[in-house]
Length: 167
Image (cartoon, rainbow, N blue to C red; front, side):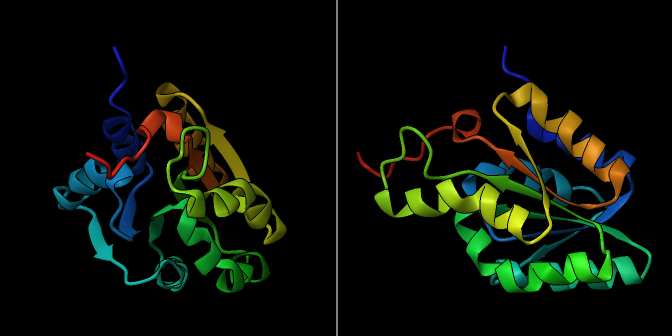
C-alpha cells in the first residue's frame, strides 16, 4: 500500500506550525494543497509566479511565521534571482518541488529544467534533498523544517506519476 504522503506532509507542516502555504497550482501537489486549504490554522496563497512565493516567505519569516512554497521543477527557473535573498538574509524556507523531466517524461520541454533543478537550487545556496519514494517525503520535510534553512525537497516524478495529456 502506497503511503498517503500528502497527509503525512500536511501533518509535518502542522506540527512545525507552518502558517503560510504559497503555491502555483500543480496536479502533483493537488491533494496537499487541498489539505492545507482545509486547515484553519494555515493560510493558502495562490501565486501567479513562483518568485512571489520567495517574497511572501521572507515577509512571513520577518513577521514571525513559517511558510512553505509548493511548486513544480519547471518553476524553479522563475525563482533564481530572488532565491539569493534567502542566503543573503539567512531566511529559512522549505520548498517542496514536484519534478518533471525525469524518466518517462513525454514533454521534452520539461527535460532541461528537470535535469538542472538540483544544481540551480544548490548554486543559490539552497540545500537539496531528493525523495524517490513516497515514504521518504514527510521525514525529509520534517527534518528540513527543524533545520530552519533554505531547503528544497524534490519529489521524484516516479512518486507523483508521469503526466500524460494524450488520450
